[in-house]
Image 1 (cartoon, rainbow, N blue to C red):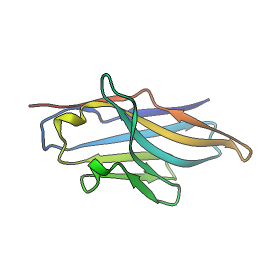
Image 2: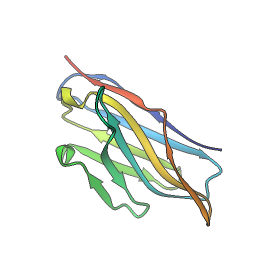
Image 3: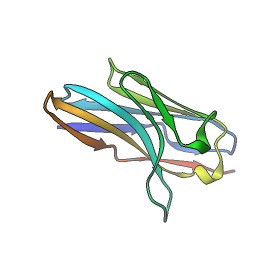
Image 4: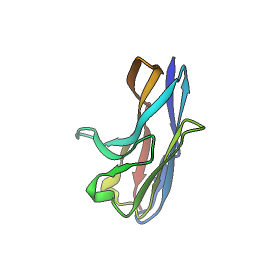
Length: 120
């Protein structure tokens, strides 16, 4: 009933930029926190950035000053602008959202992931 779909991944050279987008659709009453996580091969999934409905943000320390998370509440979308990318940031990037299907019913949802490869 609820779906998150990411786009914008791909291959980029070290120092380059990419912008990820994620669209939420389905039976949505409201969306609370949204965010981006990443998982490299052999590693656990970890937080990259998270944003509240009101625009409050949290970033992983290593991306502060280079990545910017934003959202469009009217469109149920979240974005991640990634600048000065590093090879070690190669990973699958997952969109996350806590979605209320009704005032009393909410769940965590994840997208299918989009591959980001930073390589020359």
